[in-house]
Image (cartoon, rainbow, N blue to C red):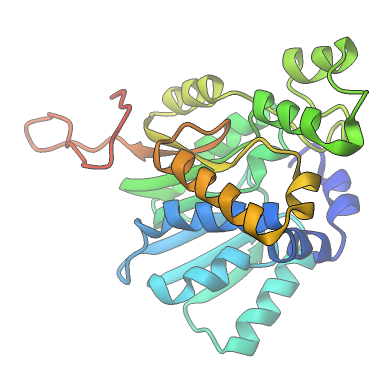
Length: 281
């Protein structure tokens, strides 16, 4: 079981916080749109998708008509109920939601899906539990399937904190350097948010028999309070800059894809056109 289940329940409550973040803030809007761009290329009417940490179903509702089946799994019953209510209201037959723990996906069979989206758990779990998520996601994904993981970059999150107007005069400081850079934890939400670096995630994935396809940014270092205060014209210019960064996979905040080992009959690795940085395990 996730070690911080109670903290998550207290922080996210009935699900309104997460819906507010993704639907009614510029930072959340950008995160959603860039994540969709990355995941959409792997959606297909013949494919089965499992989303781990689905929250109240923002991504599930978006991708519902782009896949054969979509299962959303979340730790919090309140989130699952909100998602299930949306499914009922839309009359969706290929989408369902269930309560489950990312570190132990009871009720999800081995090799039962083609695409795994883990867009939330890695933000909230320490290193040892993140490894369990990798293992479980690998277990449920079919050979040749694609997995997407989102995580909070230590440097990116700290830079964003330093740029927030509300933190002026406080960040950076040595105490926070110790907590964020050395321990990989959040100084403001200890036990709730954990931070890591791409290299650590890549190593953990490799140890679970996965290989990295590429990295791409879905969030960009800029104080989110400044983002909300930008005039519309300036915000449009900022989005153009972010699109430039996104297209070149050079952002500070990154999510990344890994793909299961996939072999031809002669045991040579299958090459894929979306591979940028590949290590065959």
